[in-house]
Length: 312
Image (cartoon, rainbow, N blue to C red; front, side, top):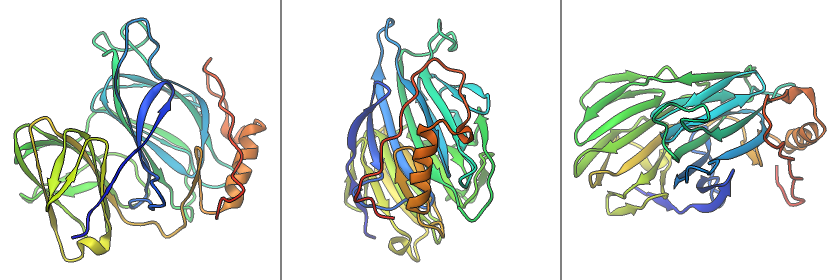
């Protein structure tokens, strides 16, 4: 099997160091998963504000937040306010088409600023985007998932963050997370040194993000904040992949069926054509009502112009 190891592009968002794995040097989405950041890990002093991401828009996508450490307050233009804490998922759906869109903010919270009494002064979060199938009429929404299927298998604890999964022992798990295309996401936390066998589904593309430690598979090494990536053609006829790691290693295993439509990304927008991205940039910068308002004092971030060489 051909496995590609992708290295991150390092950046900063909202005052937090991030490792960006998707998009990555021309590589296409993994199924509908089109964007992947690991934010942190970072520790804050008690007088620091932590992550502060100002008001910004989205189109034709879902934001998918998986919290590893710390707490973050989400506010959006639908009027939702939700603190996400460790081992929880937030999914915000922007809707499809030029009449829809959503805007939101994200900011760290601590025991004295709206977080729980034991909220950590730090942050580690996996932030993903899911491209929506543009041939479907999908409405805006927000969902919070405080409880997800969790089980022990071989040498690891697993949490099914989205989709359905059949373990190597034959047990089936189904996550409640809303989705509009076939996909899966699993957090795998090695509790002991050893190996874990993950089930693969025919027709899926897969990726594995290492959030802590390192993994080895078939002679390939993937370090922290790197991404193993393999396509459906790479796993044709195969049903499993084995990973070897030390205790404390943690990964995010994602997969899904490719969408039928083209997926273009610019800034915080997704579309299947260049013209829609240009229209979304104009609409956001001119205060179009499709993006609504967010009850927040954080700054409103302007959309940058599309580069002249952008292809679509």
